[in-house]
Length: 174
Image 1 (cartoon, helix red, strand yellow):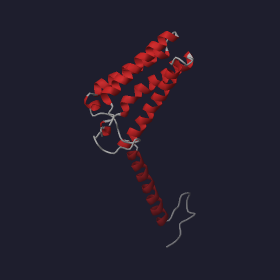
Image 2: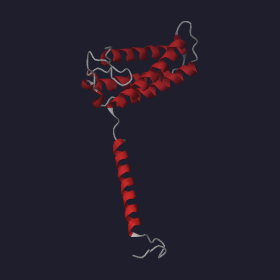
Image 3: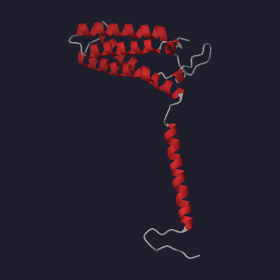
Image 4: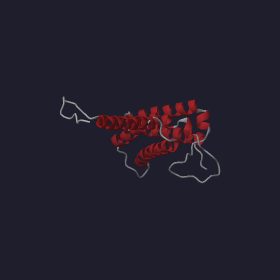
């Protein structure tokens, strides 16, 4: 069998074509598998992500409420930035509760990072949960746009009430 290298610009031996095709198929199948894996996050990853998001909302609320405490010093511009961030996060939160994350079970040991404390009622009444998150987002946005300290204080009070009422309905304590 003669070596056909050097004949024409893209001359390859039969074995080279087989190797090239095998590598191409391997690469294509790997890309397809990777694309399939990226379609849906595992429920535990989604629960972890939403806990991070809720923690970030809580940290922003803590910053605001510290400024509004009797011994605190309100920097309205900073507080409004925190409120704006909360508003954006509250718009995203309902999308972090797909049905696959409805995994509450009573009387079990929980991993604080990846096990849910969301009550099954959240999915039963998802439209209400979604509406509450939207309303809370609007309140936070109103706080971010408040014209003065007293208006800001009132909106943050309303926001705390909205958050606490949603947690009372849709968050298990154990």
